[in-house]
Amino acid sequence: MELEIVEQQENYGKFILSGVTPTFANTLRRMIMSEVPTIAIDEVIIIENTTPLYDEIVAHRLGLIPLKTDLENYVLPEMCECGGQGCTSCEVSLTLEKSGEQDVEVVLSSDLISQDSKITPVHPNIPILKMSKDQKIFLEAIARLGRGSVHAKWQPISTISYKYYPIVTFNLDNCTFCEDCVEICPRDIIKIKDEKIKAVNIINCSLCNQCVDVCELDAVSVSTTNDKFIFVIESTGALSLKTIVIEALRLLKEKAKEFKVHVDEF
Ligand code: SF4
Ligand code: SF4
Ligand SMILES: [Zn+2]
Image (cartoon, rainbow, N blue to C red; front, side, top):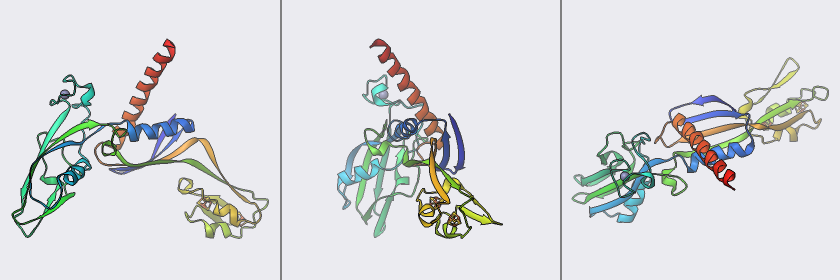
């Protein structure tokens, strides 16, 4: 198995995974979506709410705020020594207390005060609610580690997808260099110069087959490899992209070992 990073920004990445089966590629995607844990607000104790927003909606919005996650110092409640009762290893408390001082006051994610300076909202400017002058919100939010398979708020990514690695080839015996395929390609993949035709930036090919359809001489063909995949991943910022992929592979290895033990016992 080989992993080649094509593009890496803070919360966005593109990589090519080769030497694996389609099943493995899909398993990695599902492990990232469903099994890599992050910290998210899981319980909200409303002490006072005189804003126009219902308690339930406030709680729902708080749950969806991505929080920076520390996998080294927190464990899932079901794996914690406290037995899930709640302790500093499996949960963190954040408080929010704000009164309307202006005609329209916006409560932001940065108004959440965390008892652990490492577990804070990824973005400080996420609006939670608006309130008028003299209205008030006062609450305590308990954040816990959880998995995307239980609730989407715990997914470490906002999107992850992959596609088969494209192959675009030309039959030079048939090609008249008419440039019809060049003009129709929406991704600017096909180039013709000095009676030579080639595909460039192949990973951008969307496999739309428009070049094949437009060529009346059957001089272009589009196919895919079965063991090479282009992944696009966008994290919520709760974890770094590197941590997400490494953690997913580690958890997959653990699950495979566990599966083998069960098979051996069979
Ligand atoms: S449309 Fe067909 S014939 Fe024309 S340049 Fe493309 S491959 Fe060649
Ligand atoms: S399949 Fe679509 S994107 Fe790919 S080279 Fe052909 S026209 Fe361009
Ligand atoms: Zn605990």
